[in-house]
Length: 339
Length: 281
Ligand SMILES: [Zn+2]
Image (cartoon, rainbow over all chains, first blue to last red; front, side, top):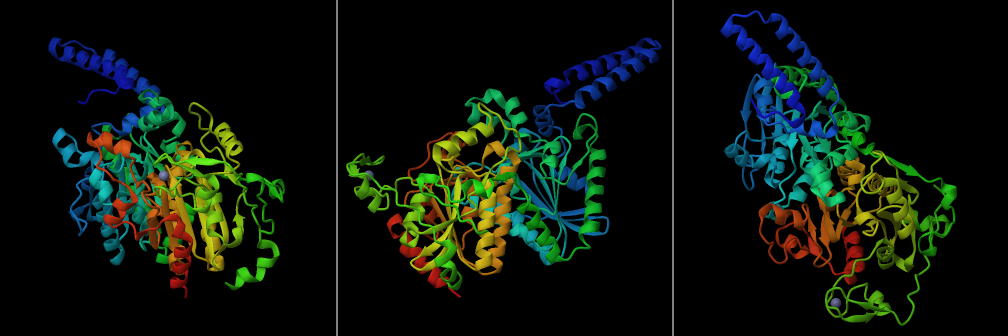
């Protein structure tokens, strides 16, 4: 069992107590049924209380839980069959992004996602889920393959960000992500994107242009991590909790802001508590969406994606009168007023 | 050309009075520390005559530099930021915007204008770094999006002049989505075969680089401009080493295949006009 997160400690303490009580019952042949039942009830109450009132920072912590399912776990458990494909056909195979064709029931799908590692070695091998440009180019290559053969695309987003390295810059990290944003918008098959852990900035968005966008319940998706935001705006790493609150980066927040289409529920305490339940939820959502999106023509799918992102943004428009003919900037601006 | 010509004499012509630079003012170059009379600097397109250092300038200066007769019409200048997140760090976002608007006399970090460049129509969206570091929020996204609509409607090429630290944190995920919004919409220009030019100036980093700045039919930059996805400080911290000389500068990007060319500011106008003519249907 992994180390409990700081806010989970009271639950773990009670669970340990329950363990002891059960152990005692076995060893000394005592009847502790009542005591155990009471403890179980207490644990459930406490869990409901803690997990039902998670702060944004606590959600971020859950999204990074070391036991949380990663992209390949979803693929293995959702697809009835899967074949991984490698390489961007140009430079190399980026291990931080995986992709390939699989089957969900009778439906062939292209599945692509950022991949994190579980132990020191595999974490390094996966570069902590931080793709290089060739990762984004591999992803786009696979999407175009799916498009050519009319197969829907599923993207699992889980990254602390695109890799900020020297070679990544040399090979055009910015260009690689940019091209994905533009080209994904006009891919003529359904695209479904699901944030399964961390959705950090452009590195996440680089595989995030979908007809449907979801977040699992305990994930975050924003322009910057709370830590980096803290270091830039507060000039210290100590304000990550406040930064997380300020950024409004949870699934609920993003649903309210119109950035995602829905929240996929997780079991109490996070996806790792009962991965099978999460796989079922994710698979059901995908099946439902593919069934619906397959009824749309390629033109409609593309137009929908462009319109969906075009509508994102919150701004105000000053009344025209306010500026009409009024000198403003540099004492010289005049507002064209006819439109 | 017809549309502009037709209505030019009517509602469209707006002349921004030339900002008169008083005599006797001097500019001390940030690079070579030599002094130049400000008026001479201005006549040299705000480029130091001693060392070619391209002084950072804003949308007003670029519009003046590019548009014939210093005439242009600003589009959608009335858009201002909302406060979708009720964001507060050391200061709340609304106060920050208000103070910046007052200080800079700008409504946001980008202005869009329409005019003629050597007689060729052009829509120019140009960032102002002094407005919260040229940061991209919903207003920038919407203004460029509407600039694209304008380009589409009148079949006029689009130039975006970038100068930005990236996405505006105080708008959270919404600022991130502006990258997607503009990039997705650029497809419409492509479909109509309307040229989109991207000029990157010092500095162009973060979400702007990872979206529309890198998506021009032609991508070009001013000499020595810093252009990158991750900022140099972050990269240095990641790799734990000093960065090589010239890393992430325009010349470095040209060498690695991400720019079509580098253009000194003094040659920008003529170059653009030539390009527009080359692409003409
Ligand atoms: Zn100089």
